[in-house]
Length: 123
Image 1 (tube, rainbow, N blue to C red):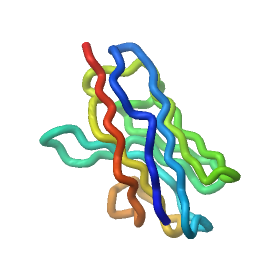
Image 2: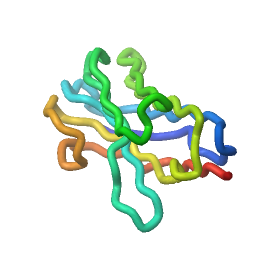
Image 3: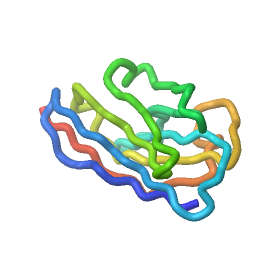
Image 4: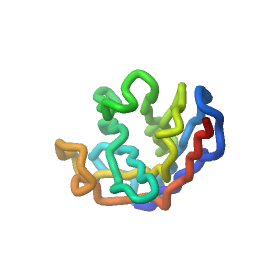
């Protein structure tokens, strides 16, 4: 599975962005997809996760109520709608996919990773 993330950019605090992640190759996995982010000098952290069916979603406390993850299985694409962005949201955002469904939101629970897209939020 290859993942291609897009949609990052520069936005002012309070603004919005929508990230997309298109999957190609052997996309018939049964696992969840997710978004992680990594700020300069920090470890990669979980942002959001969505089950294969889209029925279950999970969010980091820091983004709950501001970010929404969704997926379109017909297009093999997962999205991250980010509203009310804050300077502390500045990071490289990575999409990830599981080969099969496993619980948990750690990076070790995901098998495939995209190249990342940079989100910069100015104050």
